[in-house]
Length: 213
Ligand code: AP5
Ligand code: MG
Image (cartoon, rainbow, N blue to C red):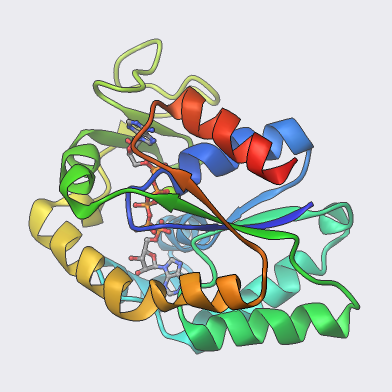
């Protein structure tokens, strides 16, 4: 199963991708998590990505496309993978198509987690993320067992730098301008599946599984 998770910032892509990865036993590839790990590790890529991310803007396509092409060519992606946060622009979608056709593969589905802007800001302020493993929580909707500590790896949970309300607004505008056109792109490709992302996390998960059949 080769899946793309589409949706606005805070729509629940990461939350659902983690569950789907476990259910289908395929890797969850989040470009945002890859960048955050690089920022934490102080790598060249991290240094380049940080200023864009902190402003809520997209990292340039050339820093993302090769990275994903290399990642999906790895052994653990043989049975499939879930892309979370990629592609985010039409050129990225075209680069993905080119990389896949070079391997004689294509995507099975692009899942659009549909959440209106009004719901997003509320979710972002309550989100807590594990810097180490990328697991995502919410102070109201999805609390960790011990406050401030990741259930999975025991590391500290943080409020992401780009979850400040003013940055969230920029991310939403960037989403509407640059990423939303992908909905039509994948609709034309015949692989778009849309789920109502305002439901509970469990209901969204069940909805996606039934869409995937
Ligand atoms: P990225 O990390 O991908 O962030 P994003 O797309 O803005 O999405 P989020 O991770 O904020 O939201 P999500 O949809 O995963 O929601 P989540 O499940 O956490 O990218 C960050 C930055 O990196 C970008 O701005 C850009 O600069 C750069 N970048 C990354 N990829 C790039 C690319 N391909 N090209 C260029 N630049 C790139 O859920 C949100 C919160 O809501 C959580 O607290 C969660 O617990 C809660 N929640 C989830 N579902 C529900 C529900 N059903 N009900 C109630 N609460 C819920
Ligand atoms: Mg995410």
